[in-house]
Amino acid sequence: DPDWSPSVTRPSPGVERSRRLSLPSAPTSPSRGIRRQSPSGIAHQTDSVKGISLPSRKALDHGTIIHELFSLVDWLDQGRPGRDQLEKRLDQASILIRRSIPTAEREELIKRFDSMLDMEQITDRLSRSAYADRPGTPEVLREHTIIARGIESITYGRFDRMVVGRDGCSVLWVDLLDYKTDHVGDQGIDSIIERYRPQLQAYADSIMKLHDIPFECITARLLLLGRGEDVRVDLHGS
Image (cartoon, rainbow, N blue to C red; front, side, top):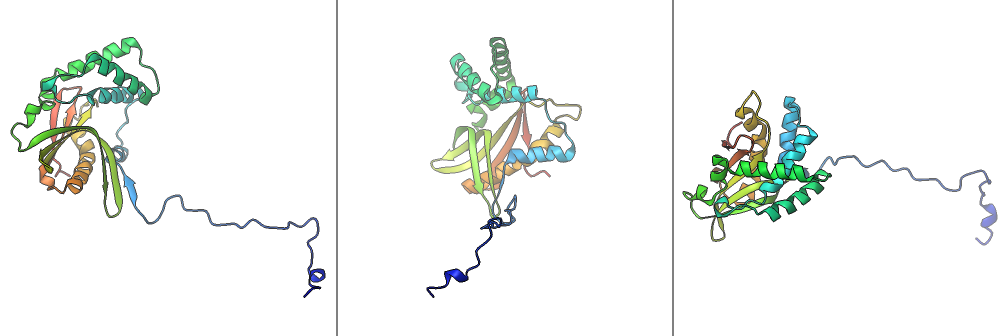
C-alpha cells in the first residue's frame, strides 16, 4: 500500500525508540558437564572439614622453594644437582613466591637442602638402588603432570616425583613420592598420612586409568623432609 506510512503512529520525542532485551543470566556453575578436580585440592578440602590450621605464608614459601630444589634430583647415587643448577632454580622459585631471595637466605636454603639429602632414608629412596628388587627398568619423572578423564570429572595435577618401572613400552609398576615439609605435631606421623592419603589415592586412581595397570601395582609414600623419613602410605586405607 503506497499510502501505508501516514497510518503509522510515530513515537513522541520523549519515548524510547528501542528496548534492551533482558536475558536470564547464565548460572555460575553448570548443572551438567565435566567437573575438574585436583588431588591437591582434595587434601585442602580435608583440612577444611577437619579444621586443620593452614601453614603461614613463610612456611608456604619455604615449602615451595624446597620443592623446587628437590625437583632437580634425578638419582642421588649418580650425583647431586650442581651449584649453578640450584642458583637458577632459586631464581625460578623467587618468581613463584613473588619476592626476591637474598644471598644470605639462598645460602641457608642450599645448606638446608644439602642436609636433607644427607638423611639416610631420603638418600636411599632417591637412589636407583631402592628399586633394585623390582622388575623392569626404573625411570624417574619429576614434576610430572597427570591428566585423567573420568565419566563425570577430569583429574589434573602435578606430582613431585614418580618412579615408573618399564619393560619396553609397558608400565609394570609405579611408585609415587610426595615431598612434605609439614611440621609433624603432637598427633604424629599418622595425622600426616591421613591428611594426604586422599590426595595420593586420587593420583593413584588416575595413573591406574592412564596406564591400564592394576591398582595393586601402584605404591605411594611421603618423604618427610624435616624429619628425614620415608613413610609408606597404604592406598587401600580409608
